[in-house]
Image 1 (cartoon, rainbow, N blue to C red):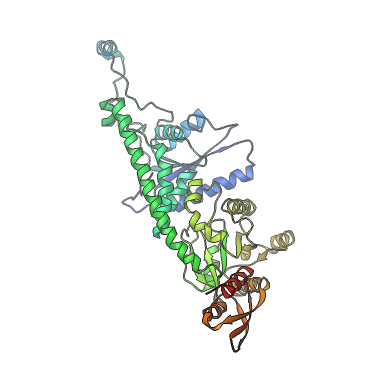
Image 2 (image 1 turned 90 degrees about the horizontal axis):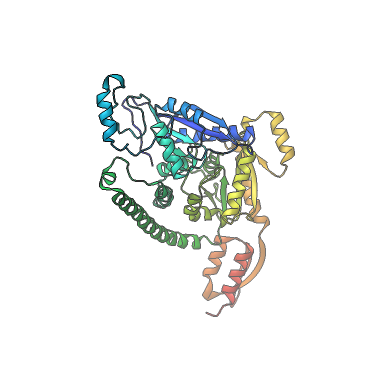
Length: 464
């Protein structure tokens, strides 16, 4: 993968974007995808200084781009602009003797270089080439030889962002699993290293050893993740009947801003992609009885790597187990409809497709009246608001409270005195409308979730 590039003058490293316009992609979708890749690379810490785009019927199998565009990319990065062989040319005694005898008529031989494809003396401060497509290991290797610099595909960029932003132990373990799974098939022996000098067999043995180390490390990390998930399972079990709301949506849609406004908590709010990787759970504020818990989840994105979805499944389970989802959309983003569909697709993938949800059109303060009126007519069931406006947040809070109350089931219980802990539990998980102490039991009129009512009924009638 890549390391942080730190320059003495404090300037950010530079990057070049590469994208191919394929026939089945509309011009609008293509422009949106390139723009999103630029935001991803910027979030990673680079300044995008150029773009190399091409319209093709398919990706070139060797290095994605055609020969002409590959030369253009090489000129930007200081690389040769062609796929060079990493294997040194074999010595030929007859040719060497001929070159010595005709030295006056042949160009001076260049000294071999160890720049991994970069032309000797080529000056370029491009530190990254980011490609808006998934690259195979050989394609990435060929592009690195042609450009003389680090190459990452879209998946690699996203994984690197996750790697740098992960803070909690769980998030770090999850990201490291995905990162190693991405790296393993891209390992290769150094063409000029000791392995090559010792022979092909030694190089292959060294490469297989590195891959086995990665497999062992992934297995170790998965065991760690299972232990963490077991600890979380205990906490989730304690919240089993709690009223829970999960904020879901595309990255940078404003979920964390809404989280801060709904709960009064000081969660991280930044105008960049994937600012939130760790699930944060806070109580709705001002608090209601029983409490409503709000969770802020990791944002989704187009082509979210499957390894990351799998690794973050335990985190995303907060959405699958929530009572209601607030599907937050950046209404001011021109590509919001595609982002909306991406979120729905990921929700289906993690088993949260059938969870009740409210579409929350955020950032409406950036829309003009005509655009807002059009969206309101098209999506009458959605709630339009700005997380910055207290009145809008109050409307959303009122909706959340009413959602739970309109789904409550009424029930009457006679709780034996030796099980009065259940009365306390009723106050925590629902609404107790009446409590009356009788000779042999406590009469309780209760409203709560249907599942909670059934569980309480079973706990009361079960033999001690």
